[in-house]
Amino acid sequence: MPATVALVLACLLAARPALALACPDCPLARRTRAFILEDPNTWAHLALLLLPFLVVWLVAIWLHQRGQTAGTGKDG
Amino acid sequence: MGRDKKKGGGLLAAGILLGVGLGGFVDGIVFHQILQWHNMLSSWLPPTNLLDMKVNMFFDGLFHAVAWTTTVIGLALLWRGFKKDTIPRSTPMFVGAMSLGWGLFNFVEGLIDHQLFGLHHVRPGERELVWDIGFLASGLVLGGIGWALIRKGRTAKTA
Image (cartoon, rainbow over all chains, first blue to last red; front, top):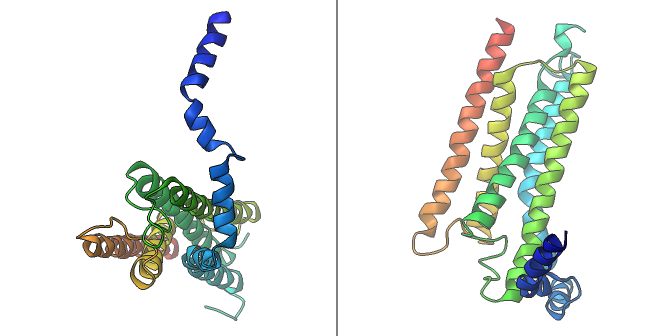
C-alpha cells in the first residue's frame, strides 16, 4: 500500500507541469476563456462548425418525414 | 404491423445520423488528435503557441460534442423505430445509410470548411489542395457506396 501511494505521488510529481497546464483556473486557462469570449469571430467559428452538421441534419429530417408520410398518399 | 408501414425512411434517417456522428469522430480522432494534421480553426488561428492551441482544442471539443449529439439522436431514432416496429431490418440499407451519412458529411464539411471558408485544410502545406480534393472524393465514394447499398436493400425488400 505505501509503495502504491509512493508510486502515485511520483507519477503526479512527474506529471506536475502537465497538471499545471490542464488546471481550469491557471492564468493560461483564464486567458483562453477570455480570448474565446472576446474574440469577435467566435460566433462565426461556431456557425461554420455547425453548418455542415445542419445540412446533413436537414437531409435526415427530410428522409424521416418521407418515411412517416410514406403510404399515406402524401408521398410515394 | 403491416409491411407497408416499414418504408425505410426512419432507418435511413437513423443510419445517416449515425454515419455523420461516427464519421465526425473519425475526422476528429484521426486527423485532429492522432495525426495532428489540423484542428478546427488551424488555418484561421494556427496553433503555434499554447493559447492558440487551447482555443483550437476548445473548438475541437465543440465539434466532438456535436458529433456525439448527432450519434445519440441517430441511436434514439433507431431504437424508437425498433420499438414501434416501423423500420425494416435491412442490413444493406442500414450500412448504406451510415456510409451515405459519412460521405455526405465529408463532402459538405469539405466544401464549406475547407474550400469555401478555409477554416482548416486536411493537411496544410504545398499540396493541401490535393488532400482537400481527396477528402471531397472520399465523401463522394462513401456516398456512392452507401447509395448503392440502399438500392440493394430496397430491391431485396421489394423482391
